Amino acid sequence: MILTYIIVACLVGSTLSALLAAFVAWRVQPRLIPLFVSYAVGALLGVVFLDLLPHIFEQTTHYHAAAGWLLVGILAFFVLEKLVLWRHNHDHAGAAEAAIAQSHGQGHAGHGHAHAGHGHAHETGPTTSAWMIIIGDGFHNFTDGLAIAAAFMADVRIGVVTSIAIIAHELPQELGDFLVLIHSGFSRRRALFWNVMSSFATLLGALLAYAMLVSLSDYAIMFLCFAASSMIYVAIADLIPGLHKRSTLTDSAQQISLIGAGVASIWMVHLFV
Image (tube, rainbow, N blue to C red; front, side, top):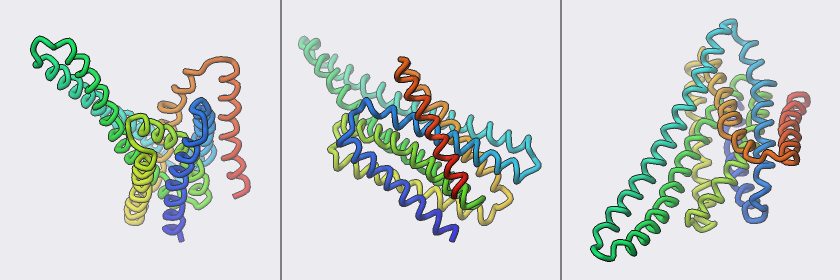
C-alpha cells in the first residue's frame, strides 16, 4: 500500500500541478504569480517545522547527526543549483561569443551585422535557457520524488502533508516555467508537453528512493533530512528572495498573510488527516 500511495501522490501531484499551471497561465495575470509563491513558502516551511523535523528528532537519538545531515542537504542543494546556473551562464556566453565572432567576419558591413549578430545571440539565449529550465525542473521534480517516498515510508500522514506542500510549491514554479518557455519561443502545447514530461521525474525519484529505502531502512532518517533540507532551501533561497522584490506595504501584507495561510493549511492537515 505504501508504494501505491507513493505512485498515486507522484502522478496526481506532478501532473496536476503541471496542468493547473498551464490552465492558470492561460487565464491569470502574471502579477498574481507572487500570490501563489507566498502560499508555497508557508506550505513548505509548515511541513518542515510542523511534521518532518519533529518526526526526525522523535525517531532518532543521534540529534547531532540528524542536524548535520540537514546542513549537508542544504549545502548540497546550493552546490547543485550553482552548477545549473553556471551551465546556463556558460551557454549564454558561448552563444554571445559565437554571434560576435560571426558579425566581425562580415567585412565593411560589420556594424549592421553586429546588430544582427546581437539579435541572433538574443534568439539563441532564450532557447538554450528554455532547455536548461526543463532540465533543472526535471532534477527538481526528481528530488521532490525522493522527498515524497521518504515521507510516506516514515508515516502515511507525513507523506500526505509533504505531497500537499510539494504540489503547493510546484504550482507557482511550473507556472513560471510555463511562461518562460512560451517567452522563449515554445508554443503553448509544446511548453505544456515538456512541463508534463519533466514532471514524471517525480515518479522516477520516488521509485528510486523506495527501492533504496527498502534495502537501506537504517538510513531512512538521512533521507528525511534531505527531504526537509530541500524544502528549506527552496523556500528560503529560491522563493523568498523573489518576494522581497515587491516591498510595498500592500505587497508585504499580502505575502505575510499568504505565508501564514500556507502554514495554517499544513497545520489543519496535520490535525485532521
